[in-house]
Image 1 (tube, helix red, strand yellow):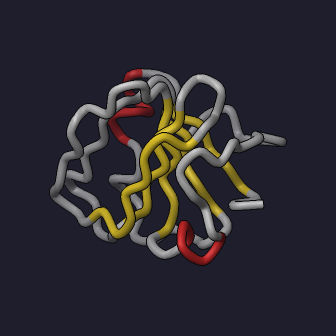
Image 2 (cartoon, rainbow, N blue to C red):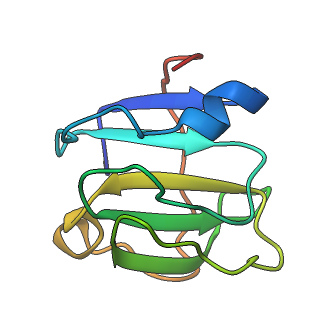
Length: 109
């Protein structure tokens, strides 16, 4: 298990807001942004790890320690992104081509 508490941002406003108002993110929490093929960290206060996933939840790109005030390029084939506390990807051993499974999530941020 990567995180126990997964929030979902699936509307225009929830995707735009993302993690901007948070001061920190617990290690056991993540944010699934769908649809999504690029991420910005404007107005964020802490670095995060990013997992870009295709429609089948396969990891196609990993960005670790993504710092505030940055923007990723568009990731071809990405349909959704999981944002995690920085360091979680390496701690949990997530790799490209891993297939994730969402067991339970909070439907709205």
